[in-house]
Amino acid sequence: MPAVRTPSPDPHGPRSADGEPVALLRLARTTRSEHFQQQLLQRLLALFGADHGAINTWHPRCFVSSVGIGYDLAAMSEEWNRIGGGEMDFITFAMRAQPEQADFANADDPRWQHAPAAWRAFLTRHGIVHQMGVAIPFEGSETFAHLYLNRGPASPPLTPHDARALTALTPHIREALLVNRLYAHARQGLDEQAQPMALVDAQGWVLFANRAFCAAWPELADLAGAEAPQLPAGWLSAGPAAAAARRRLAAAGWTIDIGADAQHLRVALKRRPARGRSAALTLRQAEVARAYCAGYTSKDIGLRLGLSPATVRVHLRNAYARAGVRSRSALRDWLADSD
Image (cartoon, rainbow, N blue to C red):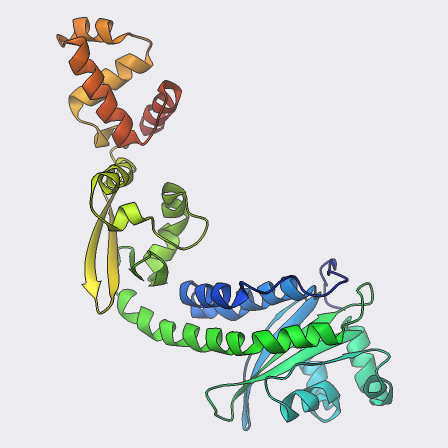
């Protein structure tokens, strides 16, 4: 029997999906195609309180692909073919009959009770006692994605509310699948670039990014203070606030180049050769900052370096700005990390 995660569904149905259409599009635009369906499925399982599920893509003449969570898909598919599951699967017949209309069945459903014993045993072996699914057509073609969200014996039954919520979300799931495929083609040109590159909209949302940008994003997100794939306005605009943001980016060893690409911005980020963070400071700023962090006063530093206290304070202010910190202890830690 396949490993199934511990169920924790909401007994009152799915969480609010008000923000899901936008969230699904952002996921589609910023996730590489080979990982997208897995992440999409994980999001839907959490939203609908399901324990396991799958997305199977079918063409009338051939099976295209399958992703699943909570199943040994290889063993499950082998058994499904061996028992002739395609002829017994009542929920899939219902899904195909009404595309984009979610259907569900619990173990006490008459269709479930009247299904062949081999089919009921198959569902039981794979921990499925409540099943919901929807067939999603691709651009009016004969190709469908079949989405299944299933619950195990420890979870509550599915309800008409669950099915209505999935039906309402299905057009947005279809759009996300299409957008991800389109952006996968658009990414190919960027992937030829070794440096981190991305296309962003006017608000800084990352539309798509190359492999190098995806690899660098955790560090960049930390620098940006971002929890979502959005670059801060200070990295993309002009003015005093932008200059300060750019200095903080430079202090961490990055430069940013921005060019126009149709109606969007093509952003290229370059990392300077590693020479320590203090390389972001001038020699005098670094001297002043290190003496200050060692406990010397502005007057003491001025006497040591032949500077006026006012000049020392200017160098310190610039060092704080380039380091992107606001306290002596934070500046000390920042300098220590550079050594």
